[in-house]
Length: 313
Length: 325
Image (tube, rainbow over the protein chains, first blue to last red):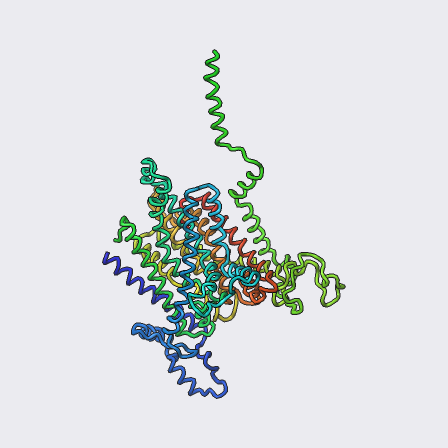
């Protein structure tokens, strides 16, 4: 177990370094961040000033060295300052977390509340009408482009019917619940199809197992068999997948936050990309990479905890 | 005598009843519906249209998809009906043909149907080039990992794990936003980087089983080289898996292209792309919802068809892969 943990931790660190190095190299190859400040040779911008600015931002060194300087600073807890308004990267990232978390958690609730019951029904009534509903639901869920769905929902509920606001988060955070509905449905829609499929296949497998047959043979009520014996065992897979789905919400909300003008990390990230604000960009990449790695790690561990038959060598 | 016939009769009716149970009588509508559910007829039609539109785009455009007419911004769909513009004499500068702007005009006065047809070509490029590159890369790495095992297997599997934990949409955004010159190849290349990992896993699992089969051992004894065995004996055994994985992952690949194009980091101007068309129309959602509706519908139908087709193919070829989401 210790060896397994050690290997996973080393591997996780390697992944984070690799991901950040990749984005670092790519963003440098793509363009000179100094252009965000001022064009060299522009009015009132002397070559001396340019040189001083380069040194201040550390852009005078080779790219590889720049990366290791950044890595060293991060190791000491210094994430740098944004180029645009010289705010601390850590503050900019962390102050966007609550909004993104708000959206992701509501989307998660919607996804599980729709996906899991339909999955169970589809498995119980295999080949029946619920199974068809589930199948069509899954096809739609995986094929609907989220940005299109979002715009259609805005058109229907905000523009045409005027029931819900078309964007932003409102001023009162969680209390402004009307603002979160449309973006959360858009974000949770695809995931609910994944939950449905996972629940359905897990339920089918378990309903086919020996202990269910025994319970039925003993004359246990059908409802008890389904909900107490089968459902609780079938939940393992969808629940562990939740870690991955939740992180993909946090990351995948880039598009949804753009559509609904939701003031979260995704929208900030797009701004950072458009400005080539590399310290901020690197902050986000680091954050997402850590999140992804942690989620995968958690899933691996959770499998072992929930299902003791899984052993780590 | 009477007793004997009576005894024989029930057994006959039982067998008849059994036959009747296996072949339930259905009315024609239910039959047709069942046929549509079981066989990918509708997806086949949609994908056929996609291929025709993508390949023959140059001959099918009702109007040049790049030509802008600012006076016709967000023109409502004509649906082939005569309009005030088509009634004008042919040499009039504002004259348009009846079939131009069949699905309306986008915010720059370009023909939406023509841009959908042009977008079909980009979608086909994604399917052929990005998926093809990912397929070649992923399948060959999968065969190597599965066939050699040991150190090779460990290295390749770890590389795949690492690759999958990179937030890819971020990398794509960074690269596509800054890369000069702007060509569609950048996105196609990026998508092939996302496409390869699923192939590695499944093909590796197949190759792992195949390498200890007798015919592989026989080839080895006969003195065949590792390369020859991998190409001639192992790879063909994984074809059905490759086909299934390809057809199942193509939908999400197309959606990724559309999402990147929507964010302005995908197919650059002036090339048409469905995701970009939706993005361009979002400011007009109140007065001209058709601008976002039709390109999005095309995207949705094509992705759904690929997914349906992939499901069907998997059930036919390799039900083992059901776990694959």
